[in-house]
Length: 84
Image 1: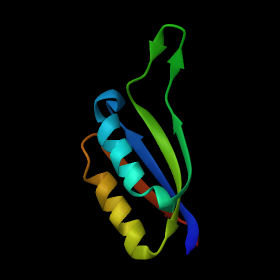
Image 2: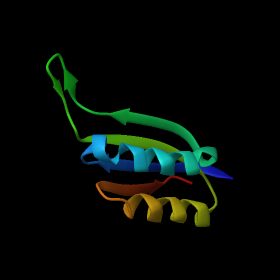
Image 3: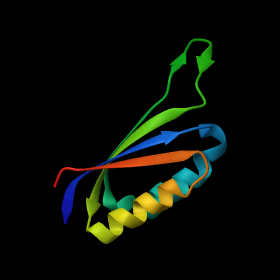
């Protein structure tokens, strides 16, 4: 199983899109080795947009399915970096 795929996700309106995104992340949970989420926050501010980075494992068919799923979601843009 190839584990050198990096998926970058831009999440717009994360509060309203979080439930659907979490469902997709759970669906692919056995193929996600690392997950990091970032958004701007401060004492009196919390951004509704953010980015995530995933290290994904799997065959090409699985990775393609992940990308199609993420890019088919409202408010989500996904880009793939294949380091295999």
